[in-house]
Amino acid sequence: MKPQPMVVPFWSPEEVEAAINGTLAHLAAGKVLAYPTETVYGFGGAVDERSVQQLVTLKGRAPGKPFLLLVARSEMITGLGLRLTGYASTLAARFWPGPLTLVLPGGDKRVPDRLRGPEGGVAVRWTPQKSLARLILAHGDPITSTSANRPGVPPATSADQIVAQWNEAIVRGTLRVLDSGRLKESHPSTVVDCTGRLPRVIRPGAIPAATLRESVPDLVGDA
Image 1: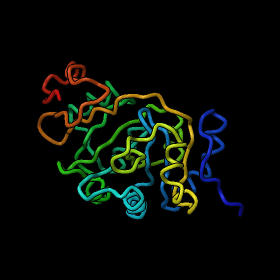
Image 2 (image 1 turned 120 degrees about the horizontal axis):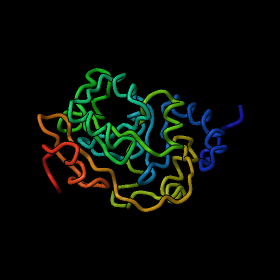
Image 3 (image 1 turned 45 degrees about the vertical axis):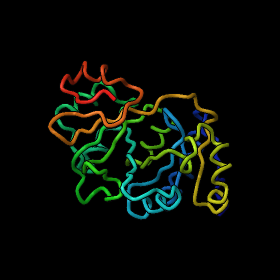
Image 4 (image 1 turned 30 degrees about the vertical axis):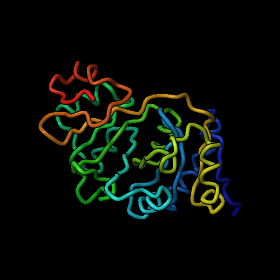
């Protein structure tokens, strides 16, 4: 079998469709994918222990710093046993797909512990990036996500930056890069903890707390 290229064009609809099968095979093998998001390039893979450990190893992620999940339909959340509380459902209905990450309760025994944050929840975002959403739908399950960069280095906004930093993993076949060119600079997603009685902003980002509060007046935190 001809080996799959590890840096793959992922810009036009035709390129996206051509990349799907090889990328799904890469995910099924438990390997790591670099892909464009609505903010920066991300690293991720399938939601299972083997794939998550590959991501931990490649990223060099410190213990206690979880990854988030990217979804492209609501069934992907319920399929993992995660729960959209009343106010979380309101936020999701208003701002998803979009740059809002919700930390949700649930997922016991279905989500690897490495994906669970210190508050006990699992961070989830419904990505509005159309090419990435197409891939996630083809995969049929969420994929994990973290910024594509080494510690102390800004998150990558181009595939070239990833190739420069992670060439060894690419050559080894551990990392496959979906190249969508240079991404526009943008704010990271706003992160809201939805595991408690009240929603709480735990990281400011693209959607201001004042805007979120128009939908959930009891939102705690502005920073």
